[in-house]
Image (cartoon, rainbow, N blue to C red):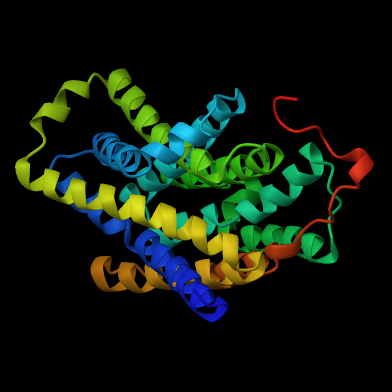
Length: 305
């Protein structure tokens, strides 16, 4: 395949992933209306994804999989990232969730400095500054001046912590360079299924998995296959395209989400939220080159060394 075709397919793959995640809120809300809660849907969808993924890539995993303790941490981080995101968009304002989640480049910059000892570039400092400014504009309320909480809804905290988990997961993933990418990808599937199961066990609703209507199972199967496909094509895309270009394309998720939330749910953002969101999106555009490489003599040893 020629480089031009490779780049076209990579670009198409990332745009498709952005479209899928920009619209993902709608099927989860639809399932919730059918009596299938987010934990139930998450467990069912990712069990389907796991089964399909293992069937398709069995030989690859047999050759490349080896257990590393860091995989447990990645499973929990990426599992919470996806689970909290879907919980948040099923309950709250779609664009508010997405923009709070898209503060993840801020956390990535800070965690890379703290855990990987990477020095921030000018772009990195720009990410930090724009993210903080955008966050301040986005969440500002007069009550904050009298000691009020910056975030007042549970779904907002879910989105914020999901972005933090995503950032920490990416930093840990970069540190564990010896683990093959397909193995890291599978931690997302197992992580979401695990957290969904734990959530259902805590609420005593695990038995309700047997009560899911047949028509809901059709949608759950479709979503499981779609998420498996987007996981594969997005990994292929980010491995081919420069990080800055990949992030720019992924920002289309905000456009798809804004349009779909307006058309399907009638959600509108205030001028203040648009301004804060624009600053946060601008910070994400700068996130491709946030840090200088760690000098070779200071680099951390590979995971498991």
